[in-house]
Image 1 (cartoon, rainbow, N blue to C red):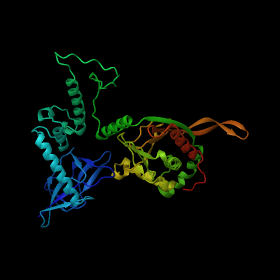
Image 2: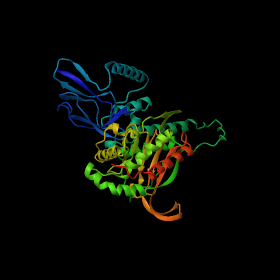
Image 3: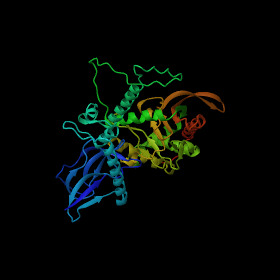
Image 4: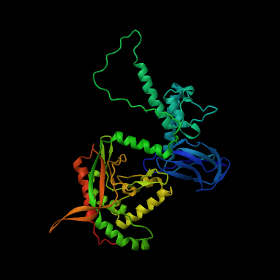
Length: 441
């Protein structure tokens, strides 16, 4: 019999790790090739990992809530064959894994020689990631057992460790700066220091219900807070006359639904206008990496979509500059449908270069969205609403009822100045107002 290691495959661009949600098979179960063996979660997408071999599951190398690195073995199968060990790899060579393994062993030995090793206690489980973090920070088992856990069954998660280490460091630093009884206190610095914010305690009056954030809400919270701390946000607003588009869509939507079997909405029309405006202002289609600016050749527009549980996810329409309105419409409908049914693939939410969110879906006039890092711009579209508008005609000004919509663009003022941001969102509005009503879909 041969033993085969199942390796966590690459789950999308820039994804380096995943959290194990649940096992589809138990030790001793028979596993067929391509049969789901484990369910994992990356930053925003839950995925099923199929087996690459037929055999019997003899060892589970990780438990629920553990973090697995891409290229790392997560299970061992026993298969028919003569080889003692066989490894199933995806996009990873034997040499690369040997080098990685050798480096990990060297680091592990160095850590063990200078620090103690954390192990699981009888009544509490700690993931390998948590144990490694505790070891590196010099946290012993007694101290680790006092850290409150927010994971399943009270397990300590990576987020719990980071929060504790941060507060622990602040406490240690404050204690080390306390003067001794014989020492004279140091004079207060003249320069003003930025205030340190700590969570404001909420009194438990007994008339509230406490609900823990789910995994996705925690990830969104972390990502949005990081974005505000990273980028200098600024927002510009314009108002677009959507009357031509509203009338055109009303005239074609029935035939389009009958022919294509799906609806044509305003979203793909707005995305097409954004793609055209990006060609005019390519410096809005960039990402920031430290002090480097990455100018993207493809226009990959992220589309914020609401999930049934109230959370948001941002699937990406790739290479919009190469798609016509029908192609963008089909991509939008496909991604929106699979997002609502939790069937998105990891690659579906990777590679975005600029984002669009439709706050008008909820009846909102406008919004000031938060930039989806490392992008530098995100545009919000408000509700399309009838209102009286002054129109300039060759016979003079008149007041008419028009379908109007606010567009708001939040952009990173580190690399996008007000002129560029304002001109871009104005150009999007111009393309919408100049929409060709003879367009055939």
